[in-house]
Amino acid sequence: GLSNEEIEKLSGIRPMTLGQAQRISGVNPSAIQALLVHLKGRGRKLKEMTLEQGFHQRGQQDVVNSAGV
Image 1 (cartoon, rainbow, N blue to C red):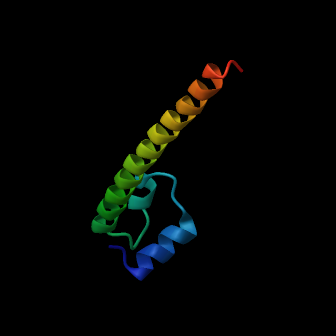
Image 2: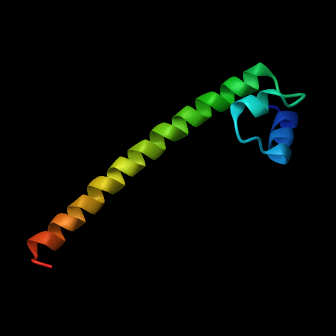
């Protein structure tokens, strides 16, 4: 996990990349690893949500098309 100091620094600076986060004084390599794991997990969830939403939208479109609209 991240220490309170690391959370404070990352929240204040809000780096756009992991490379930028690595350069912040007081942010340890273990914190970067924890961020990477977190981001990969979010990416998987986002991909799953996008796929589910796509299937849902296609299903709605099929209903509209079958209704002749």
